[in-house]
Image 1: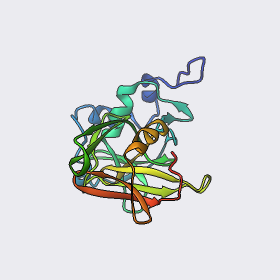
Image 2 (image 1 turned 180 degrees about the vertical axis):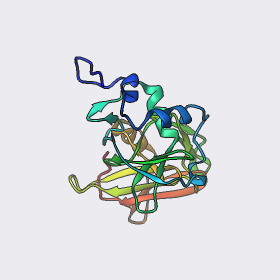
Image 3 (image 1 turned 60 degrees about the vertical axis):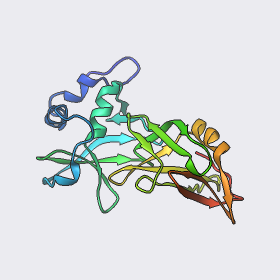
Image 4 (image 1 turned 90 degrees about the horizontal axis):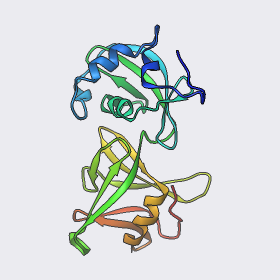
Length: 202
């Protein structure tokens, strides 16, 4: 595997001799948009040293994958298994990877309408555009370190995106308190994130 001076992995490095990924990359590259991974049940081929860190950055053998198109390609064949693990899957192979937190990061917010008619739409770092609604709920999870709440949205197939810190500050202007819970209204639903007194972080 060739390495840059900064110790970063380039797209072509992933296909170095002995890598388990060339075939997967070739097959995934023929897809357009998220693949129907829920329909594929190939044999498990083992674990590969790919890690998505807490900030949504992808790494191979400890080095960041620089090519954005390659990251988006992998994201189309990412699946969460019933046991909570994450795999890259095609019709003929399945490889387990490591995800430190959520596999995606929500990086942009668009708001349409006002009040009960308000709709909140998020864009992720891998290009998914998701409306906060009954099929794509927003939730808050307790952060053990800060004691605050971290917002997540369900993107697809059990895969979530954590809201980037800058986006949380933007979303805060749309928070509502109902009873003892804080949350937001979108697509005709109230999405509670947790106790109103808890700070919302990311």
